[in-house]
Image (cartoon, rainbow, N blue to C red; front, top):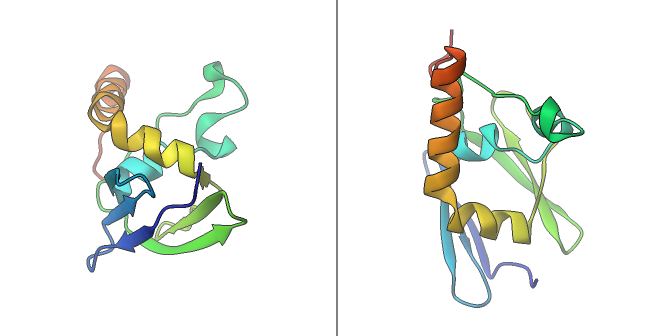
Amino acid sequence: MQPPSELRVSKDRRTLTVRFADGETATLEAELLRVLSPSAEVQGHSPEQRVTVPGKRAVAIAGIEPVGNYAVRIVFDDRHDTGIFTWPYLATLGREKQARWQGYLDELAEKGLSRDPR
């Protein structure tokens, strides 16, 4: 997959817009990106180890760093910075945003967790 033609962080640092070379655009909230980070800290090393991350409603994007020609590292203002977001993963998040968000909300409810910081 080619690199996006545009990566734009909103002025409030809460949204990342990704415009792909084929014209597809994904608008992804910082909270969604943070709680679905592809990092081992969040995803674990197997599906059973995946962590439900609560309390990130107010998280913002502090910065974006290129990783080769295939991905970006998103740095969040809570200092999480270990996820490597590949172009295909960002495209998948854009296409499956509603279902993945609902899955996250369902996990929070099931575990008695909140989107709000403690």
